[in-house]
Image (cartoon, rainbow, N blue to C red; front, side, top):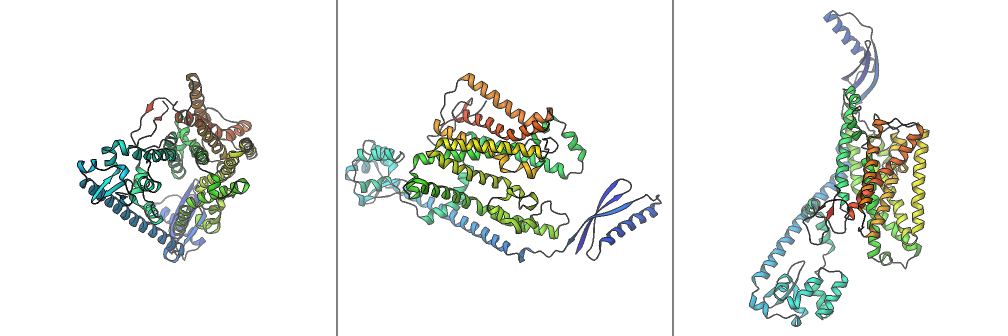
Amino acid sequence: MIIICVMRVHIPDEIFLGICLPRSCGHGDAIKVTLSTIELQDERFGKHHLPRRIFLLDDKYLSGEYSYWKDPRVYIMIAVVGSVVMMTIVGTIYELWLISATRSKESNCKDSTSDQEMSSIHTEEMDSSKISECNGNHIAYSQGSLCVSDKILSSRMEKNITMASEAMSLTKKGVDEGIERLALPKSEVDLVLKPQRESFISKLLLCFSAVTNAKSICSLSVGADTIAPIHGLRFFSLLWVILAHTCLVAFQFSDNKTFRTRAERDFLYQTLSSGTYSVDTFFFISGLLVSFLYFRTVSKYDVHQLTFTSGGFKAKGIQFIGMVIYRFLRLTPPYMFILGLVEVTMKYCHDHGSLEPVATDYINCPKYWWRNVLYINTMFPLEQRCMSWSWYLANDTQFYIVGTIILIIAVNYFWLAAGMVVVFMLSAWSTTAVITIYTEHTPTTQDPFAHYDELYDKPWTRIGPYLIGMCLGWILFKTKCKANIKNWVLCIGWMLSMTALSLIVYSLYFFEFGPAASAVYVSLSHSAWALALAWIVFVCATGNGGFKLETFGADGEDDIHYAE
């Protein structure tokens, strides 16, 4: 057992020392050892004694009592990781088996088919007892030892089967029209056009398959019904977040403090100090997707059938609860796993490491973990938070709840929902401005996280970009991502957008704000940032962004337009 002591020595400048001593040493012993060591060095080298004073700033006892293997949380996390790994292995093996079986059946179909046999097959002679599945996704017709897949049928019997092949990839209306033209009995049509349903166990295993997930993660295809420009915004914003955090954290712990002072005078350093606006980009994207996907869903499906109600307030309440529960179940399990991992890791570092952890998660997480589960941790003081860096997830969930209420109301009472958006925006701006004046906050390059607890991570400061994203999502849905914008409007829009983004990022290099200007800048800059991004996304999503880059992927994908 050892004790870590941090002391300050005046001779006459300050010198900070850190020493390791046996646990048996006390506070006075640490000072005595330091004094005697300095005196011995002075006598040895014959130097003059300098006036000195030693202060014990902090001491830390490393008990080493905490052990991973005595913490039940560790065993829970090991069980979770083991279960996921096991499901991944089983799911991957299962999908590989399905792929192998499908290829084997397709090979058997091709080997048993000849041109002469194909010419003797007629659709009107099909019997439901002879229709079988040649593979998991395509129809097949079997007659004795003959097995014919839909691909071969469509190529050999265009006049009789073409409509059936096309109907498989059409909407429900197209399928119905194909059925009428084929004049087949309903039972036979279901067998021909519908693949076998996968069981729940099969779907569950495929969710964990490394093959399926690797294809999804590494896929570069963009669906025709997605908003392509948000992927570019995500990528550049993520790089911006990494760059800003890397540099700012390095400056905080580096020994050469004067280098940061010199760097802050550089114009390009404003890109780092203004990196906080990259988070507003993610809030904007989140609101955009929630709104766009919600309106698209309610336009395609009957909400009353989904909620098993006849409508009214009860249906809207069930819809709201269902959306919130879905988000909670999707985010909370991995979130809680990371929280447990941080807690046990910080406990071990505090009990065994010589350096004191910057965050007090080893104290706060056992006490206040429930605030993270409920996503209300940003409502409490910073010193009482577990994983303070998870503030974004808490704010985004709070915005999602508010946004869901607005969206559900907007379906039947659009102007009421629009009024709610205006009220929330004005309330957020005014609240932020009042707090800025009350705390005498002045935005500066030197300290972009000043008044972190009062302004930086509070929901009323950040909700503006989310609501603006929701408004853009509704506009894109109503316009079906199509708009004819005149060139002079495009020029003015791009100039205003780029000017706003540049002023937000680099204005602190040229101006020093007073109280009133600081209140305006802090309260409106986040929303102004989102408005500028909204223009970029709108013109690019509607095909007015500039040069066109065609994507090579699945059939039916739209072209993606990028800003020049």
